Image (cartoon, rainbow, N blue to C red; front, side):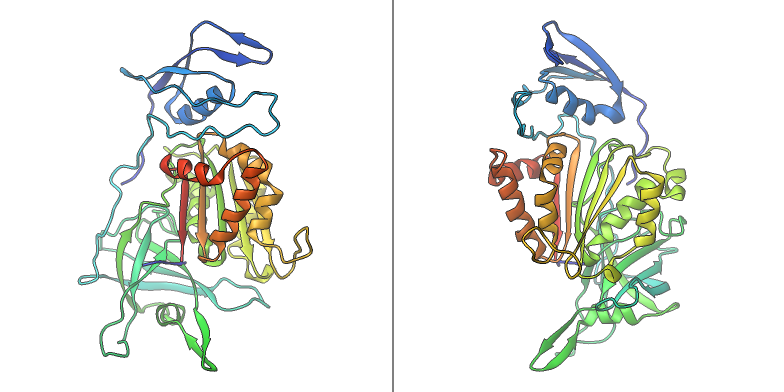
Length: 389
């Protein structure tokens, strides 16, 4: 997917919460109590404490004690739509050593194409390819959610080299072959009409046309906005259209691919991952075989919802878009957002953002919430991640 112009390790520490009071059913414990959990469950435990009306007095990680500010108020358990408690964890585990700009436009890495194949089924609209490059010998490392730049061959109308275009990475840090020396992209050929003539996008056409053995100028990696949380029990909601599935594909492979799970002893995803995917036709759904396998193998952890605009209708009889799915599942989406361990990712065409924002605004208002206030809180808490193009 085109976008606009360090590795986690396991942690064996234990986390102890000092809490007062906590509601359990109809009873409220008035005395201070302590709760000890593994480090990887810290975020989900914070959400659980807040949802039960508890107030965290201290958080102790090993020998380090933290005194967080009082947790924000939580709606009454009898409220039909409890307001999300949007907070940044005071002990957020940050990605260490995020690689950025290892290769720059003036001295790009020259990658070799190893494969380039269509991702579309018969009857699909357009052209979308999966392209993999060999990075051997270059030291170009990346994380899921980052992007690389591609400088297409040739010159522009002024006789100057083409400028780079950024594309979201569709593979995990280990590459599709788990060898730590490849990177993959999901690319749609850009085409548009101008004065009765079909114009092909320069870089997207270049990429869709390259073949095994071709050498391509690569820059980057760049980006920290779309990084996947390291919390193994996080909830991850993903909104994607078209090639916006690229980073989501990387996340889901890291979470559920057997080879990835074998490689990542320090990351064994146990949370909830929900992909809400938009496409014009069923034939335009990407990586469908992988997604169906994840559904089969991890039914308790993966959920997949489709919005196929030319084949499905929304409740008013119009075309089904992602924003219609947001309204349909608003209760579940907002319930997940109320968990401090939930992250939301949006990736795809820029035009998807206003529709989703409008749907979230309406859904929030129906629950007595102001999305214009809630969204910045999620963003500040580093739980709302958007990359559109």
